[in-house]
Image (cartoon, rainbow, N blue to C red; front, side, top):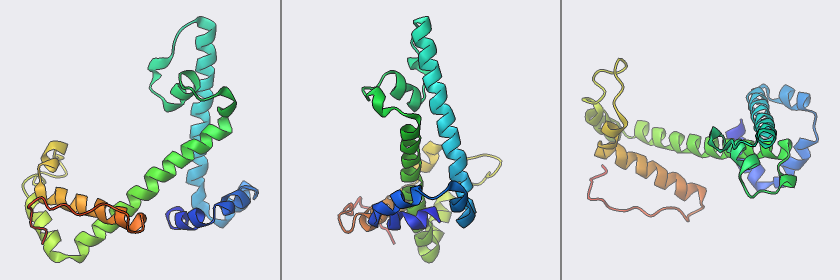
Length: 185
């Protein structure tokens, strides 16, 4: 539901503002899958609050918490973002934007690439032949990332999926196809 509604929200940004006035219970009744976002928002809010508590503790003790590794710790402790813009609500919304950006684009890329593989028997067969040796002991042994990266046809299909989705999402302003000398068909 969320991924399918991204285009609607991009085309009608004021719709997000209007929906924000609805009670959460109404939105969750309308689409129960929204519970995942509610959980994520709570997790983000908890992490932001913890980062703020850690900053206060660091100020009191004179220590630096720069090594905690959390994006929220960095923002509240070290970034140049004004404190006035570091409200928990605002940072939680930023976290949701990051999640949405990573989720929608990745899901779209996987959808298109997997469809392309399944819709084209010759592509599916060639990938299966190329991965037969690296995947021979799967699921007991997972092939290493280096092994998968050294599979030229798999890499070509992944790059073609990224190129195609980039082109579709950018309304024709996507990546050009570059001939690496590898026969794609």
